[in-house]
Length: 324
Image (cartoon, rainbow, N blue to C red; front, side, top):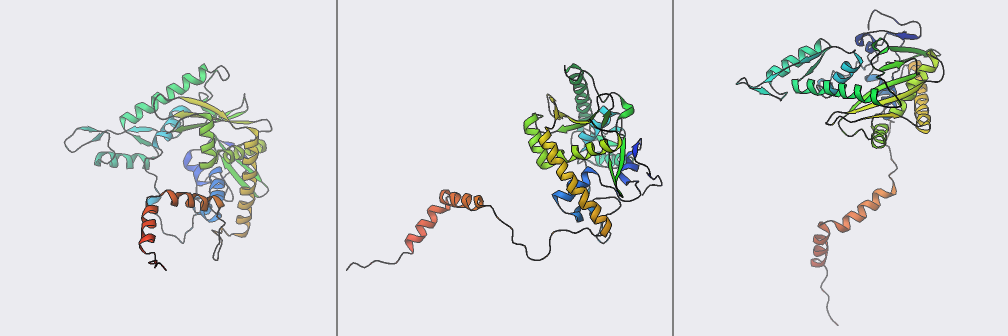
């Protein structure tokens, strides 16, 4: 844990290393912790927390995400101006030829050193793509008739850490951009799929609980900054033509997110008070299986190639009929 301690609710300018170490008096809940608690169990949420990680388990070396999120992280760094440097590493084969592979010795050694320094390693081709994405995003936002500006351009209010308290329980969040003039939290998202507002929103509610995330941040805003705040996603495609959509969740979805946030916060506070972080229920579980599962199987078995084989086998084993 860092020597810096947040003992007063507020908005702070902190480096990632301090924020992600959780400098609150007691372990605080982030939107990610809330998502893990609801999608899995309190035990999973505790194990993913920097101050609650289960010490009775060995370190899992496979926990490292490697370069899975490098492009998204680098895009955030360029657009917001925060989050460490981008280190371009040319990948070379043994004969000295340029390569786009990340399996070369030169890439692996360079990437390891960059991540250890808190920076983001990219191939030159990836770095060029990230810079293009940031440029396309800037042009899109400035040309949009409803927005008309790039809200990430005000670097002073990007990646600020928010800490608040409900009773004795602490919570934290780190918006990509706090737009005080419009009272909007701006959240930059990259996607390997399409930025289609409808499809992206449906997918992200199920996979990353963006409704819970928005509700968590808006609750923090209410505690620290007053009423009337909004939460808006800026989604940019990682593939050409790097199309962009700007998404604000409808009120019914935000209400669902608030219900999730409240349940997660209540469970978090209870687990902290008891010092217990339970996993899945004990005993032999007997889950309810929807009727459509059986219906799908019955339909499939009649159309499967094995159906003809089974019918032939039954006929071959049929008893011999003797005429009377």
